[in-house]
Length: 246
Image (cartoon, rainbow, N blue to C red; front, side, top):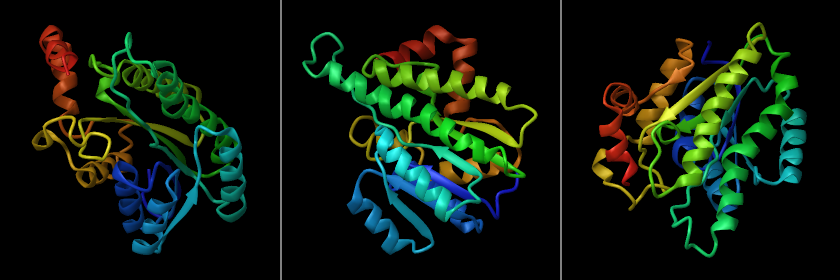
């Protein structure tokens, strides 16, 4: 797929993986729109990267998503790439946490339901483009889950299956479906939770993603993801023991 001259919308694009992807897409001469919930972060993006167009949006809110779509359709009608990056992770005791029900709804709402809804809303426009893409940001934890974040892992497993099924459905259309199966990445979400030395930088991940999109590599496995998934095939009990206890 061509990696220049596109119009790209990235959810959760004000920091972390989303912002790194936005910067790399901008470097390759694309029009880039990012959305996020935090207006302060969006203002910082606008000041530091004038070529990126920020929009405030909570993707778990149907009303916000409707407003987002109306704005993008009006101001950026050539949209042809959607990057579903927004996500959250709660780590908690599923039995004893008093806020477990609230956390369940929040994680499923942002990590999966919002992805499916926004994808469906923009898809009729994407299929009209000569070339288009949906890029879903999942995680190796959707394939090899860990004990501390059961709902997060489940939503990423759902996103993995959704990406595969949608890819099958959209064969014969101009829309390609990519999935970024992320390793442990150094972002605000992971900071302080794991050994920082073993994390991939979001900048390195973003550049690897762009290279793989250019080659039409639909399942993108950056950094240590390749090793983790290989070990999960050949010695599943070992890798599941290592990852599962986290």
